[in-house]
Length: 238
Image (cartoon, rainbow, N blue to C red; front, top):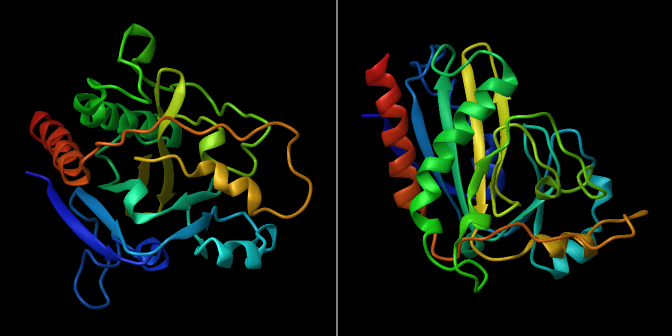
């Protein structure tokens, strides 16, 4: 059975963890076993992608909103993390477990995410009953850009990311090393993305920033366990 590891800490601490340096003994690096990391964040932050500048955020506005400003090692746009509003789970895989190229590996992980969150989409979302037009879909194409996607993670749609009823539900980003990949995944329980529009400096898109889909009753531990079960099935099938 693939292990679920509960990682507790600030957003900065969780992003700085290196699963590959932890996999061997002191001074050693070896390919890790597949793991699911349940990231139990204890602070509120605005998290920037690795290519985004700290100068794009108004520090006074961020402080007033109670948000630290953090940069992650993986790419993509900014997102807001509030402990009560998110489920953050990472999938750590040695090379050879998932498909080798970046897009295919993201789609592969997204399919497992879709299966893990599916039980939580059988109740109402945003007050509307789930129906055929509210189904889960895994994006298998290239990056889909919008006016805000250069700035905001959940404003675009990348390979492997999961949508519910046409709105992005699961955001994914990937960090690759010579030993394996860490695919970071996040789902919102509550709408907080629109806060970002008040935190950026400079020229902003002239359209509203749309909130992604949310699952208010999503259980982080249950999703982590379900993802581990999905990975275990693949391990035994291989």
